[in-house]
Image (cartoon, rainbow, N blue to C red; front, side, top):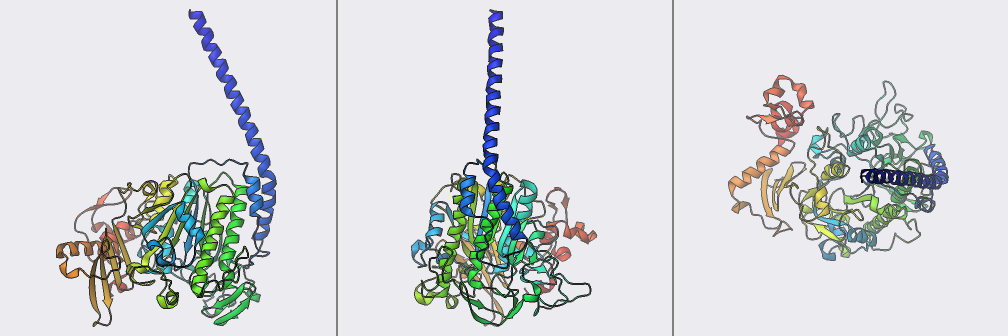
Length: 608
């Protein structure tokens, strides 16, 4: 009996060895097939991408696509990609309100047909209570930093390039940097930068904003200082200010693509270009071939080139692509035709509406890049806007199109129409399709959410205002730990949400510079028309205001009790910062709890 048992055991061991050997050889054969499929594709794409990086046609040529997407899809379909976290594609629109998209407000507001965004919503999760800031640059910093705007260098954001650094403080890491360093993401940005940067100067040189490209003191043989390449983006193709302000030129991985000797000074006005009527909103220097009508199409092509090169050179690594469209910020200059030859300009009665049409087409193209390469189940796609829709006078209200739906206000205001934004997430096979979420989220929450999905920790001194909604993506009932508070600041106006209750402190200059207090129940009054201030309990009102002060740029007073430092857990009080002021730069708690020692905006806060 014992001998038979030994024989059985030996047979099992032999059988297991044979199975393992077969699996090894099968895996080896599969890898050889994958390598063969990849080899010719890599030679094709990498060569053309390197040609693009050499700068032969990178001044904004609409046909500058480094690798053919159809070839990419064909060669890549045989390669199976398995990783513990997804690729990430963020598409950020400009000045697009919830009313601009037909799936919001029961199709009662926007009248521009948007089949691609509708499909994105149908196949993903649409957030009905998502927020940014009322204006552009602060929101872009929020997205990349996970912070309220005033956590950065300036209280209301850093905008153009000049002699100063970008909005990030030295200890803050962008989401691109974190994904790159901690999860090996291949990172890229395309489009509107708009969080600042420093013009490289020759020794003893000074800045000249009028001749920002051609001035002799500017050294454009050097990269833009503190551009995308300095906060974690390995690849970038950007304009500092979108399409609305000089320099009217692209920067490739930080370097100006325009030959300085060929730059021109554009006067305000309209110019006939190959793809339509280009508009210059503010005069300034730029590339001789600048064409505002081609902007979004260029970004689509550059994104395709990046994805093709990524798949050719590092297919096992995930990518993070951030595409910041120019649509629909002014000047509203839609192209005559889109990349596929379909008409854009003239389809709707206003240029603003035609820009919305082109935006939808660009979203469709970007999503198609993912789908055509077989990456739908492996790519998290986020569509959002940087603030609410444009003023009615700047949009298409006269034609029956309302960018804000029932919301009060517009871009630039602290009412809901100023900062409530469209927000859609799609991740095939991983999160539900055709569902909505009604809990409040912020564009700053993208940071913590992506960290959760990529299974990495937030850096201790970054993204202090970011709250993950990763679990909420999977199921509507996963609301524990979601955001309960949200603050908004615009000049001296400010507001705060606590659930559906919203308080606004509005400095009305027409009433002897008095502060007007407004209270709204958004569950019953989404249009913010019925001010409940007179009936609100004073203690509750003051409690919420205290929270607004605590999270805002001007905390009013120091904490008297101890608090714990994030990361170390050390219990301290404000004397900790008073004794060694440099500690304010190393611990976020100093700015929040000890403003008399660590406050960074004393001149501004005196006016509040």
